[in-house]
Length: 167
Ligand code: SF4
Ligand code: SF4
Image 1 (cartoon, helix red, strand yellow):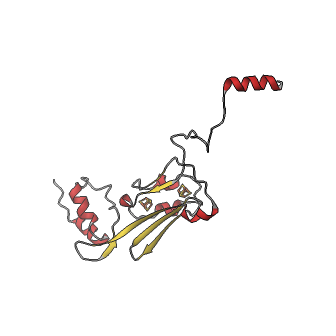
Image 2: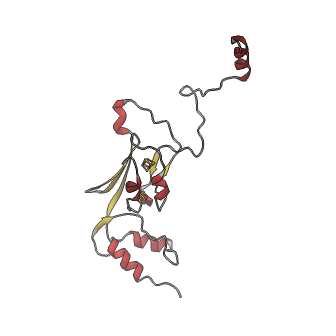
Image 3: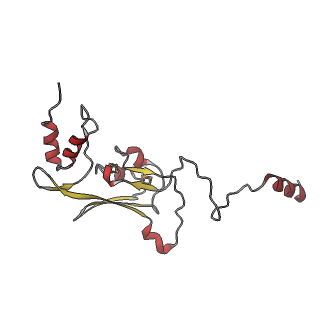
């Protein structure tokens, strides 16, 4: 094919590449991109940290509670954390536009905090994690869930054990 034939074909077909970064780029809906974390629904099980092959996820105890950090620079977008998370507290967006200058590398982190709370029953300081009650039978009502959540792990277990279940 000579130059003129190719030139004419390309003129007829129009651009075959994305205009990015000068315009939008097509992004598949299910593309595995940047991680998002929702502290409100996290059980604090730390499974995501254990299954992350890149060590991109770190939890740390602080005086305020437990912090969550996911380094976008380190993440390899495998999806393990979302797959194994029992509560959908962590999921992958389809945001792939993570390029940045070196000076911004410490901003490429998803932060979260599971705060401390005071147990309403015994007064102990404990993490305000989402309760692990997925298998409770019958499922907890909204009020019961709030009651469980407001307690420390020991008092949560006691509450669930003494819960009056209709026959
Ligand atoms: S994000 Fe999910 S897997 Fe990670 S600690 Fe929270 S509940 Fe567990
Ligand atoms: S997608 Fe994979 S590499 Fe990225 S944080 Fe989750 S488990 Fe780690």
